[in-house]
Amino acid sequence: MAIISDFEEEEEKQPEAKPSASSSSAAAEFSARFDPSSPLGFIEKAFEFVAERSDFLAHEAAETDVAAVLRAVREKRKQKLRQVEREKERERERAKKAAEAAAAAAKKVEEEKKVQEVEMKDAEEEKEEKSGAIVPNKGNGLDLENYSWTQTLQEVTVHVPVPKGTKGRFVVCDIKKNHLKVGLKGQPPVIEGELFQTVKPDDCYWSLEDQSAISILLTKHNQMEWWKSLVKGDPEIDTQKVEPENSKLSDLDPETRQTVEKMMFDQRQKAMGLPTSDEMQKQEILKKFMAEHPEMDFSRAKIA
Image (cartoon, rainbow, N blue to C red; front, side):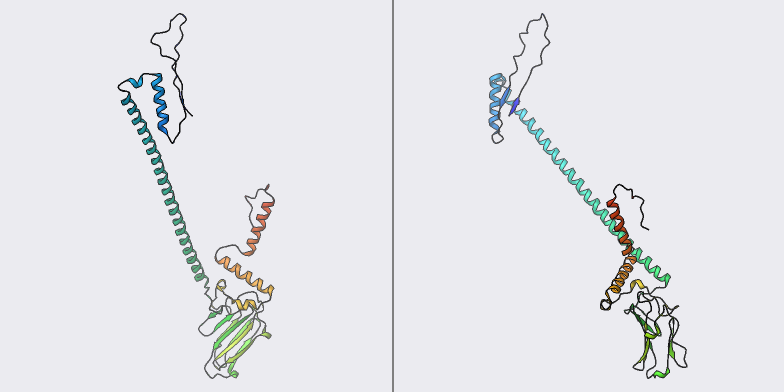
């Protein structure tokens, strides 16, 4: 329901004054139902009301005045629509700038991440260079000028080339708990020095293969740690880059295999600067304790 009302201001009443002959008649109320599907019906009733209540439409300028009002309303409507469109355009522009800023920030983060990865890699390589650590061969050992060696967690295998046709009686291979000497009689030993870790001499042996190479099997005493070198003083490998074969892991008993896999996981985590399995477990325990005791302040809590 749309209602148009017009009220005249009340004139101050003078106790002794008489009403003016030119005073306006009482204001009248206009009431009509507006149907959006037929707006002309509403306008027609409004004009009929004006015609009944005043002589406005009888004036010659009435049509011109009504047309002027129509133009003014139409222009006001256009301005409002233009204002709405400008607001939408500004909103689109703000959204575009926000998206561009977000994309730029994401790109910057990605670039910084790549830079950090490169710096970490360079730092790791520099650390390896300073420490003298070398990437192990496919057998998790090292190929040297006069011999090579490979390893599993349980054993170390050494391969020493000798002249073709060498007889076993000319071979010198002395295996002790923490010392190894390998070579040919009458010649300087190819290998002689203190082993990186102790071995079980009774479980170690050597053989001559095709009269051209000495093969030595050393059984580790500590079968839960990788060797960095065969003998102390030789170039060392980076044990964090050791890659044991899954088939050999499957040969281990469940408890040993679990320990080995945990050790491998911790080595990878350390290489990436991430927490080890023990550190992750401590963090989970702390989180659980914090959840159970929300009344306590853990802002300064640290994992030892």
